[in-house]
Image 1: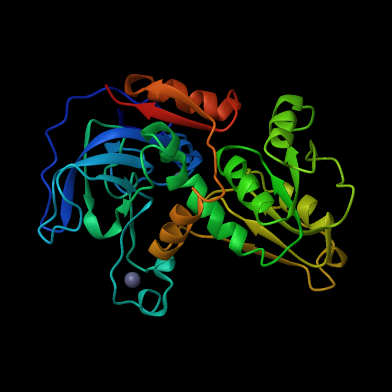
Image 2: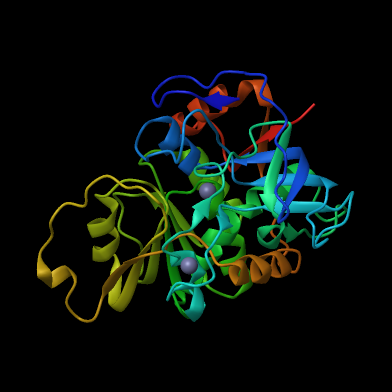
Length: 326
Ligand SMILES: [Zn+2]
Ligand SMILES: [Zn+2]
C-alpha cells in the first residue's frame, strides 16, 4: 500500500521485491502497527523522505535472507522500529543520543516501511522480540513505536508520582500500564465527553479519567502530551504542581498558544521527546512482558490501510491498529 501523493489515499501497487544491501535483512512482513506519524505523512503534515513511499515503522517480520554479518538468523522473528539507520559518527551518535543523529534515516519515511508483504531493514536496528506465547505478532507490533517512544517519554518524567496522560491512544494505553506497574497514579485526559476512552483508561488502571478541559483532582508532577494538539500544552502546564514537567511525545503538533509566564514559573518545564535510541527499545522490550503490557488491537487487512488511517484520524477505535498480512 503506497503513498504516491500526500493528502491522497494510499493505493495497492505491485512493487519489485526489495533486494537487501549487505547490512540489511530481507523480511517477510507478518504484521505492521499503524502510528499517528503515518497519518501525519499521509495528511501532508510531515514531509516524506521520498515518493512514492511505503509507510509503516512498527514491523513484525520473519527473516528470509539474513544480513551479511548474520545478526538475526533465517526464520527469526524481529521488530523494526522508526529509527532505521544512524551515522555512528556525529556528536549525537558518539554521546549515546543516536535518536538525535544528524543523518538519521527513519523507517516508513526515508526507508520504505511495513505496509507491504516484504521489507528490508538494517539488521543492527532490528530488535529480537519477546516470546510469541507472550506476544503474538498482532499484540507485539504496537510496542515498537507507541510502546517504546512512549517509554522514552515516561522516563523523561523522572519519578513523578502523579502522572497525566493527554490523549489516550496507542502509546498512552501501554504507558498507563507501565506507570501503574511502577506505582504511579495515572490521570488520563481524553477528548471532552469521550466517556468510552475514559472507561478504557480506568480499566487499564488509571486513578482518574476525564476530559482534557477538566482539571485533575490533584496537581500533577508530570504530564505527557500524546495528542497532536498544541493548546493541550498550556492546559497541561496549568495542571502541574511546582517543579513539574510537560513532555510532548509526538513528532508533529499544531501551534502552541501563548500563555502567561506565571504558568511556567516555579521551575515547571516543557520539553519534547524525539525518536528512540536502540537502548530505549531493548529496555522497553525487556520490561513489557514483566508488567505485563497488554495491547488492545484492532486489525485491518493490508488492503484496508487507508481505512485504518481514517479510523485513527476519527478516533474510531481504542488502543492500537495493526495491519495483518495474508
Ligand atoms: Zn510511530
Ligand atoms: Zn549520527
